[in-house]
Image (tube, rainbow, N blue to C red; front, side):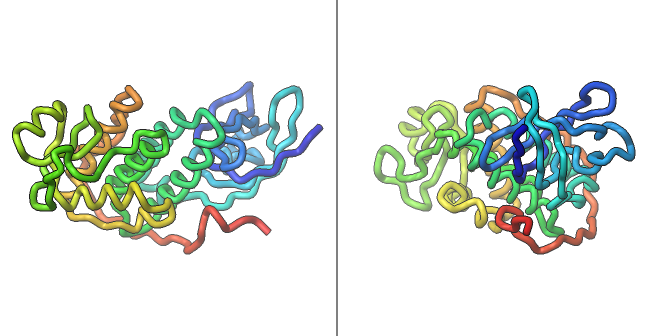
Length: 268
């Protein structure tokens, strides 16, 4: 019988047999693991608290007959502020859905793990903008998967900051406002200079810095439309969870969060 100790983020928690749950856990080192949590389906089960989506935990499991069985668990971050707010919860569920679809190997999972944990942690902050966090996540995921867009000069070579016109979804590049260039780009969305600068920053910066960015409402609206369409077309799937929030009323919530680094704050 072998033991495995690993930190991971619970993506899914599904019923298994009568009293257990089957967890899908995203890890930095091993990709997505399936782990049986004995008794977690019971209200007062030993692992009930940790066997929920969006729980960042240190897991210790044993392997028996090709199955991993949870033996010990310590919750590192519960992200309670996310679970208690419908908007943040929807944003987190949207990112988890994308994560579940793209993490098909260990290398991809390693990058996505860091990105998702930082994104979810940012959702706990009182001043967070869930729509912006999701847009950043979508754009960064596209780059991780090899769909990095060309955000340099228009193909005509005459693009200036005041001439930024559109982003071509068919060509994955920006183009100026000239009729000839717009016609060549086929499917496109008009965007501003500020939006391009924000996308360049997100594309080039590391996961621990990109979520500190702030943008105006106009730029956020442009970014959200662009990144959603871009990731949906690249992955050939309509990710629509965030659309559920379109007609929701907004209200202020007071959120308190603990200042920690969820990636590097390892258990002693």
